[in-house]
Length: 266
Length: 266
Image (cartoon, rainbow over all chains, first blue to last red; front, side, top):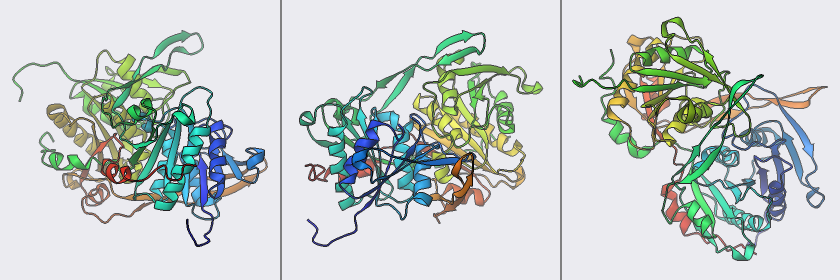
């Protein structure tokens, strides 16, 4: 398509399930067709770590052999969080700024309110803060799954972004339904569904710890909109949601600016 | 002001600096004047933990005595994150849904991009997701400081919010300059400044760990706007920024919806 020979893009692959997870291997293979790939991922599973970063501990780095067929890919495991992976890679480990950062493929949906807790998305966000385009990919199942359909879409979407570039300050959050490739109905751009987790903590007691609690949660979608990520996945579509790291509620600045904030100051 | 006797509000106090930090004591004292206070905070310092939650570990809970003058306040330390504190409190530890959740007073600014990494803000966000009004308070210094001026503003702003209620889905992120009370020039409503951390990881090697890295970062404000939180603090104002947990970049849905996402699908 492009008549000029150009440098192969440099692609950083990260995740939060850890460097040995099957999803990052599928993503690495898909990216290997598109450019020069470097993998920097946590040594251990880091789900629900959010945007935590390691300020005070040492971060260890170790070379990994991901798989024979992508044995030429440089792969580094680190002791930090997903956001640390991106920080350390962009500052120190990569030979130059990457053309794109891809995160995942996460095992489990990162739809709706889950993006707030997601290490997968936070790694992508960290990259976007640094001005490097980024995409988070998640496969909507917690079961052992076939990552190949998701990897095919990851490759097509990444190539599209490499060619078109994202608007500034925007991260793509991509969720792929866990269904056979031929059953996927296409790609839609969505908004995050309004939702929350209904938790019930299980109280336990033992002699050593006294009273303690174990988390149990159930995801509740409170949004009937047809334009949401949750609905798209349910209908068999790949969902792409643009998300932003500027958390200012710009639409509220006006009304809150009119409040008399100091009226109760003693 | 209000002629009717009404139930004292129930106020949950949380933080990320830990239950023994001076900032949470100052906030607890200030809230004790406004209603019935329960403190639920991490036993240990949890800065830069972001919105991490504890899904797979047990969360231990232990009673604390915060200080003699607020000895009547129920105070619980937990082994989890700031977001865990709110989840556990709202689900299990509190006798009823609180009227408001206040987080802090953090030692250190939570302005600009720092809100992404902040446990203080994430605790407040978690509350807002649950539909309970919430405010994060931070004092803009890392030095040993006088929390009294910040506590006075925290009390006035909390009372204002208890009386007026926040718009749905909005968290207030309040930063207070670390200057004498009489020098504070007032309160302004701001947006988060565009900014980022310039990191330089220090590479070290030792026989036990091999090569490892230590984080060093410098905050860089890239925003000359007069309406930002960073500028407000520099000018001696208390800064109030409304922030949202809906990360959808609604303004981008239109343009990304026109992209041909499947054109590179093999």
